[in-house]
Image 1 (tube, rainbow, N blue to C red):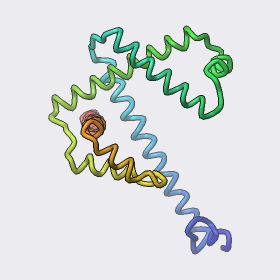
Image 2: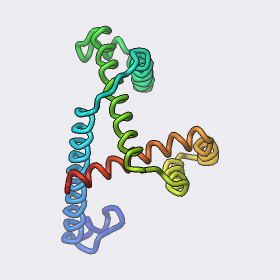
Image 3: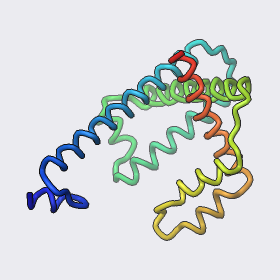
Image 4: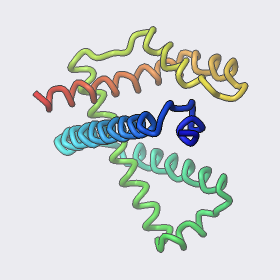
Length: 178
């Protein structure tokens, strides 16, 4: 009983704590299943998409992927060479993998944007405002700066596109379920 009271916000009994844990596990399983289903639907869409992509666009996106990865590794105090040695991959293999990921991203974004366009799916200003508030929440004293930056016209447009793609995924998932 004392243990249950000392956990998180406190529970009246071990049974109440067990119920909460069961409910959390159920919610996580449902979320995992939903995400897996969404990913499958999007993969089906991407597999059917026919897109001609400029090699320069793929190279630029691959470079962004590699730069983001390098930044992440630097924060972990690991060099790219150390990472490649750890995963047993050559620089050429790594760059080719980045090109493949870049192509996948480009086709995915294009296909989802096309679904949004064909279905008339857009994000409202209110939805963009809500997303900005969600992103700014808990940014550790950077709220005003982040809010100002995210309210720039280019940032708002980018967020609107992300939200429209999310809605397109939801629409595709609903269609797939019947």
